[in-house]
Length: 411
Ligand SMILES: [Zn+2]
Image (cartoon, rainbow, N blue to C red):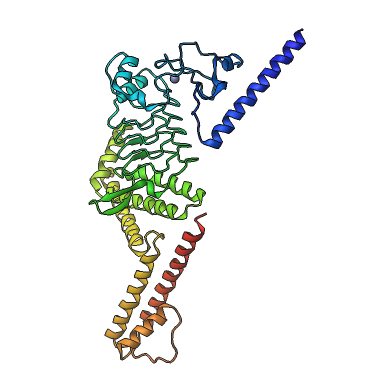
């Protein structure tokens, strides 16, 4: 008898594992991570839970169980098997329904804040089309695997929370705060991320994210693609993470945009550090923090720091204008054209060749490092010609490198 029961138990455990695996595979295929309702899927009945080794929900509690095997346990919404958060219908946002469930008149945002205040997870919550934008006073909402399709999250403070594997298709996250938010496996298809605040985010396994998500309009007519760039040092790392993500996904144009933005943030960071007072304040604060006496050395070092920042800023600015940090092919072409033109005018001015036409021809030939033996030069200007050849060689190399990197990738 005992052996029989053991076999039955092992069989039951084995079958449960199969069911769970099937459920995960099924959800993966249909990208419906938490789209199961007791009404629709017969396996999520009390009998199903009875057969599991996991905790069983009480008949008056929410039946939502996540993949870790923990139960939601909130009270049920109306006559469904789910609580308010896991009930999958937008009719629940109605004022009367919410008053009946929560006992008081409250907005959806206040209800979420209450959950966060009580350290309750909103994992797998159904919030499709929900209007929960604006400031949250309680930060750190756990909205992992939540359904936030088409939700209005404009300006929402979701910092320190989690959106792990959340669905954000067509959601509006403009001006939202996503600092330190877990974004792994998020679905961003057609979500609006213009001027969204990011910091230390991980985009690995994120789906549907591209440059287009960051589209906004300057003066209502000029398209621009960016996140909130108030803190360049933080944005720099986020753009770098985006570059790596786009690169891994093979989206080379998007990777190029993110790489350009990363360098631009780097430049802006140096610009913010040019002012020596900034360094004096920083070094002074540092000395006080480490309980050292701030001396005159601070002022000297501040000026040295300021000088190096200026040099770096100028270097990056030059690099930006010349070739868009090695991402803009057109800028190199314009730069090449200008170099040829300037040298042609110089050759004409110093009278190396008689006509302006032959000066231009000679300039092009020199730039391409081809030269022309038939032209006889007047005067002693070899160094000028050599310098044009040198610049030409560098620019052509840069041109080929930029095209190749945009076409092949940056690995
Ligand atoms: Zn629930």
